[in-house]
Length: 283
Image 1 (cartoon, rainbow, N blue to C red):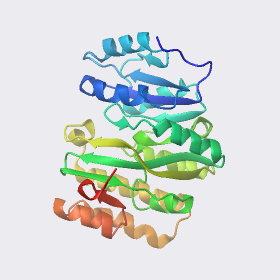
Image 2 (tube, rainbow, N blue to C red):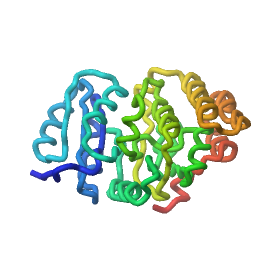
Image 3 (spheres, rainbow, N blue to C red):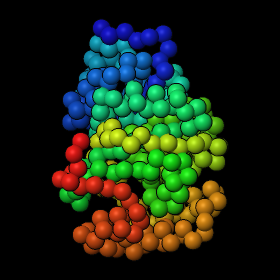
Image 4 (cartoon, rainbow, N blue to C red):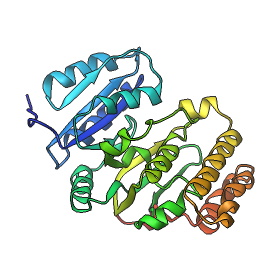
């Protein structure tokens, strides 16, 4: 049985609801990290499949894994529950259907260790979008000022692949129910607390957009885009960004009605999203 150091520096936090099909993918991606001083907080959000049994067996074999069974809370509340039970100085988000590459925790923990003014660090990542049949590398900006301005255009990072200081999260109300855009809303609150942002210019994981996900089953696409536009307006107002950047949330109303073939062009050439198709990208 693997043992845990007295107090972990990093807490990986995950919520899961009926995720047995992802178990064999996500578990090795975390437990095989090159960084060792971490715990993995997993909240079972009332699963009805084999996940509770699988998690129980996992925790019995690895002391780094701590599983909580609070019942059905919903994804956002379950995620906050996980963070509130974390002991680490740094919180590393991890969705159960995504993966982290082996150096992810080591590089992000080292980055926060050596940049004490930075409260949250992201990374480059692969997007596997089943809705659009696209697979590409997304490359966020690396400088704080550019990251803040990016919040007026889009969600700058993949929530599943950010690591941040728990003390900053504790100064906010945590993740709030925001129709799936709770990550951007929280980061705006981080920025208002004086948090600086950084990004490691390296691919450290993969994020899947599933066509059968709760998000896509329960919200119309146009509704999601309009909700995101409202959060972008919030970023412009509350972070004192130039008013002209309002063209980006307004552009959401055009984007959501555009043909699928046009969306990548708009993201990359109008909104300035740095993306590289994998067929043109070498890991």
